[in-house]
Amino acid sequence: GAVVSQHPSRVICKSGTSVKIECRSLDFQATTMFWYRQFPKQSLMLMATSNEGSKATYEQGVEKDKFLINHASLTLSTLTVTSAHPEDSSFYICSALGLSVADTQYFGPGTRLTVL
Amino acid sequence: GENVEQHPSTLSVQEGDSAVIKCTYSDSASNYFPWYKQELGKGPQLIIDIRSNVGEKKDQRIAVTLNKTAKHFSLHITETQPEDSAVYFCAASQLGAQKLVFGQGTRLTINP
Image 1 (cartoon, rainbow over the protein chains, first blue to last red):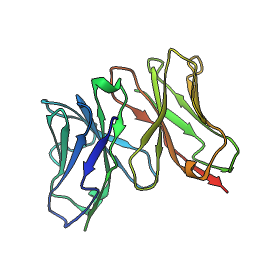
Image 2: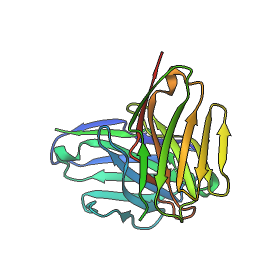
Image 3: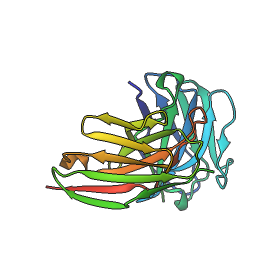
Image 4: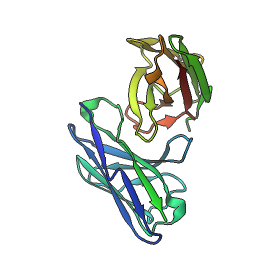
């Protein structure tokens, strides 16, 4: 149980385009989802926290107009990287937290974004 | 805010030996401590967690110990196997507060 999926697993795009990443909780309802980014050989950096039906809370230094987060249902959150640039290339990982999984965050498999 | 320090950054052990990874935290209000294993190119996978109302938890070859007074917790892997090779992250949070603070990670290599 407690499976989280992400789509796509890899994406390559041109500079200036927008990319949408989906995060789904497959077997539980996620009241809260989190988005992280991870650079090579580094730890996970929390970007934002989203609760179903409300606006996301962004961490300090994360541009909310660049990283658009939508959590429209209890099983789906999306992260849209707008006007992507090479410095946005990273590994993006979501996690989900639900009442049924008792405060435990379960992570998705990650999305590798490469901006050319 | 909470700060989590993790040591060592790299650890190499012979297959069959034990591995220990240590973390310290700064916020005495933290009461939930999960450990995640991350393989190359994949998302972190929860391997064990502990709440502050217990001092130790074990699951087969993996155990976690918690010392609330000293504000540190450790991951113990016994009888290590090649498939244990990965990056391990500790984290701390307050139950109900949701946000996890991660350590810097430990790259564990099991030598056959």
